[in-house]
Length: 178
Image (cartoon, rainbow, N blue to C red; front, top):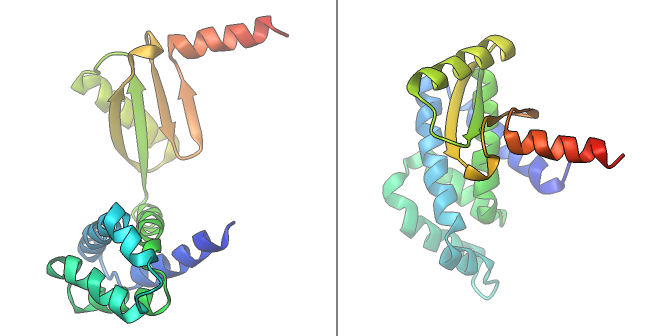
């Protein structure tokens, strides 16, 4: 595991420990999402990478942009990250926080990519089947990819179900080339 991921996990774990309940976790998710978006902005990324400015100046610049979204505790987090030169890690911290939150709330994010739009009933059936199989509540994102020809590809964590025609054709081609 890379050092950056470990550092991001440490910060995310510290923030997660601040969450006494689901409402607090939802609030931190929103704050971290905003902070990550600010940090990912190309102009802000260049600003944060500019070592000709002091870390205090970069932190203050970041806070000026994000201040309206922050409470005192989140402001302290930004100051701590700034002091340690880790403001650019906010997107990774936010992602690690979401993983911790998903685990604590027995939830998993999944995606279904289909060749055509799915009906609400089909989406509910997929969610129910995944929830039963994975023993977690499922947050399902849907996308369309006409290149699949027909069927769908479902991803949940490391688990992938490829029920697409494109996947079947690719599998057949692999089998025939052996």
